[in-house]
Length: 326
Image (cartoon, rainbow, N blue to C red; front, side, top):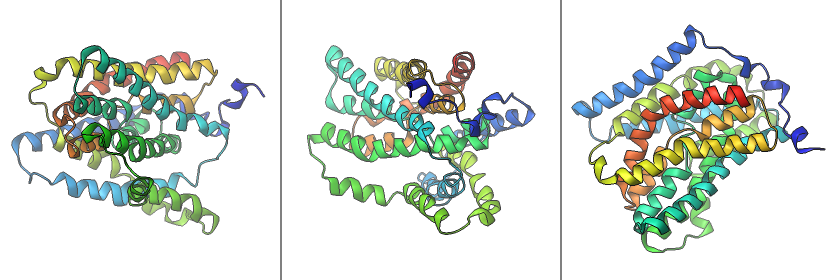
C-alpha cells in the first residue's frame, strides 16, 4: 500500500472540512475573544484573588476535559488515519529542540533560557485554546481528532518536558517512576484511559446530554483562566528570544506539519485539524513548569501571553493556507 493511501481522508470526517463560516462561527470567536479579554481585565484591575485561576483550572482539568474525553474518544473510529494527529506534536517537539539547540549555540544563552525556549516552542496549547478554536474553525465533531494531538502533547510534557526542565535547572536526571506518577495523576489522561475501556463494557450515550453541558464550559472558563494569568511586563529585555520563539512556534512549527502532510500526500480534515493544533501558541502548563524550575519564567509567560493574541491572526492565516493545500 502506498503512503498516500495509508493516510487517505477518512469518510467519517469528510463533511467537516467543507464547513463555511456562519453567524454561529462568529459567536464562537466572540466567545473566545470575550472570555480571554474578561480574564485579562480582571487580571489588570486585580478584581479577583491572586490565585483564583487555580480553582477555574481545577474545574477544567478535573471535570470539563474528562467529560470531553468520555464523549468523543468512544466515537473515534481507530485506524491508520489517526496516526498523523499523534505524529504532529512529535514533529513540533523534535524540530523545536533542534532549533533551540542551534539558537543557544549561536547566541550563547544560559541553560535556564534554553530550557524555557524548549518548553515554550515544543509544546502547544492544544486544549485550553486549541479545542475552542478547532470548534470555531471546524465543528465539535473535529474534537475527536484534536484530542489525539492533545494527549500526545501531554505525553511529551510529562516525559521529555519534565526531563528537559530538570536538566536545564541543575542537571538532574529523572526516573521513570516520577514520569509514571505524574501521568497517572493527570485527570484528562485518566479520563482518556477510561474512555478507551468503558465503551467496551457500557453504553455511554445516555449521559451525552450531561457531557455536552460540561464540555460547553471548557472554552470560556479555560480562556478566562488564561487571561487571569497573562503577563506582559518587561518584554523589551527578552525581545530577541521572544521574536525567535514566536516566529518558530506560530509559523515554523505548523509549516513543518504542513510540509509533512504534503510529503505524505495527506488531505482533508485530519491533517487540517492536526496543523491547526500545531499552530497553537505555547502550552500554559509548559510555562508553569518553567516557572516551577526557575527557567526564565518571564520569557515563558511572555511566550504564552503574546502568543495567544498573535495566534488569533496567525491561525486565520494558516486556515486560509490549509484550505488551499490540504
